[in-house]
Image (cartoon, rainbow, N blue to C red; front, top):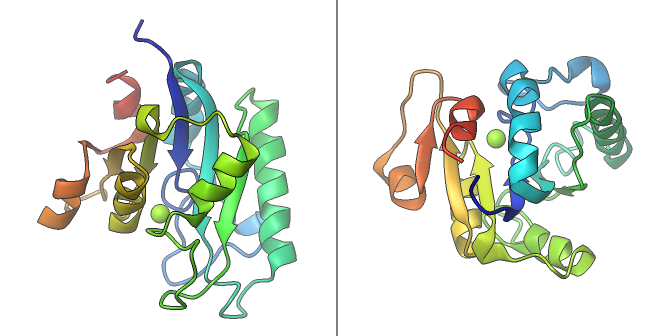
Length: 179
Ligand SMILES: [Mg+2]
């Protein structure tokens, strides 16, 4: 077995749960956890010291969902996964608008800084970011992490994404086979 890595940073929408096209997950009934995540997370967990979610949630700034609704969804998600013995150490979210100039919306690294404040022992160079957006890959690279791009069902991705991705996989399960 390969030596244990430090932290697996995970995007939320499109990685852990099914992304709602043109909408935001506002409550638990709209949260559909992806089968490949449920299958893969227990396989990934032993390879990492911790798993942390970093998610952009500009639906809050748009007034589409409230901080309380997002936090309720996250509380449910953590409890649901814990019952399946999938431990997520913490979820960080950015509530700000794209273009707001905040320090926490990916690809800015504010959420990584928050994680470092909570878990000072985090070693970014020995950590991995997995996500389904270009901004996830940039976030990972901006933090000095390895990056894994989860491609769309049609497998399409642009050259910019390829340049920032150490691995490109069609499912998170595929990544479990690479560890
Ligand atoms: Mg995503």
